[in-house]
Image (cartoon, rainbow, N blue to C red; front, side, top):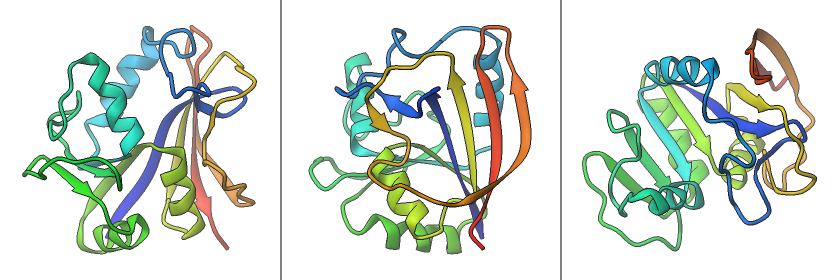
Length: 181
């Protein structure tokens, strides 16, 4: 069985982007030793899962539908009911029920699956108790409103802190195991 890890950048007030879906350097820090740490973490993942809006965010940087994001070595699973492109060996478009698809993926795969974005997707997977671990790159900024970490889901779940890193630029990275019991 695979382990599903929600590894994402957030503001101190737990938004993954502003209200318009923007997650640029006006919100998040894209330089510093936390970036090196993040790139090392990514090497441990076997596949990346993301919602359609997270995937589309890369289009402004030249990414085309059906192409893998910056993490080209990882198999990509893109969850969107509106997006149109042909799946290939590196990028699979999932139009059906995301929860059922992820349940099956967890059961048949080994290793670590990286849920990198889509607050709504994360919320639906958390509701179904599919997320095993949460890794937050907490940026030292509050934006007041934006796209919430778990979409509209307001979870009441116990977390076990397993690691905490502090970086010189103010980013902190707590790692939590999710305890559904």
